[in-house]
Image (cartoon, rainbow over all chains, first blue to last red; front, top):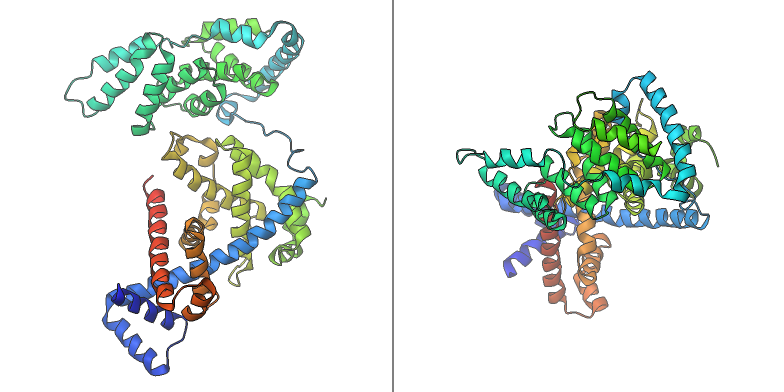
Length: 276
Length: 196
């Protein structure tokens, strides 16, 4: 430790300009000859510069916080309008004419919802009538996972996914959710696990959590079960029970209802009918 | 309140550079709603938006106060500032991804970022400084105070010993240990960032 301490002290004195001219020349020569010492000097110099910046940052943060606290006192933060979530990919996919038509339909739906909501809890009724935690394709997914042979490089992963999905087939959504959460720690990008985790969240009434997971999948054209993700995203939006999200749900439902050979065409059409 | 155009003028830039209180307030009023909108659309909360806004504003002010700052040419200030916001939020999400399953690659808002904004936003030095700032605040207060006194205020070990009630040799030892702790924390944060 003594040797380290002496070296560190010398470096500090060098960087602080506290060495005599002779001592400095000798130390500079040492730096040239000793790569470890050169590295130590460079590292400490960078650290010093960063520590200086840290002090400056604290000073600026104090100033900024004073501005923020003044704005807080004026009610700036509480008076901000709620941010709107825009599903851009879907809007971009639809033509202007379709968008206008949808906007008109949705406008009418919102008016209808406004009148129906206090009386019948239309969101609740619609959601409970249509939400099935077992997607159409679950058996297909499980069959595919069953069929994977030992030669498959991802065998371990597929087995783990199958084990996590099995409780779904038995209606144990909470258990399935936990198993999928664990699976996702190791395989965070697995789209199927993300979709089923979202559905388990929705089954446990966590619609905001489901939206976060489903939105990217619903917009991903390469995801093989994209329609299913869109359907459950629409249901999640509906479950949020506010006009902005209801509008988004209706946009998605209209999109699914318009797909003539779509897996969720019939459900989407019937749900739209119920909402209107 | 002044309008958005004012915030783009060179006079306003000078006011910001000098940390003028009213100008900073106006900057908040114009830019914060955009930041809030962006963070809420990318799995963040209003609380996150305020944290990211503060950090981004520090970086932005630091950048425009540098003598080497050449302005942002054709890029408007707003975009430039939002470029920094995007960068910082991306980094935060990368860190959080370790603890959850947030997948930043699938966030449309992130993918729509202008590459130019990304390039101008932060240099390696600035990332390092941010790491050091974070690490310094994680150090025990006595270690942090000692390092600040020694390195920033250039107080001698002997004087520090008097102030803190230690012996001079213990101050030297403690300074070395504090530096090691700081370096360890910086390494840990760098590792967290690089392993995503």
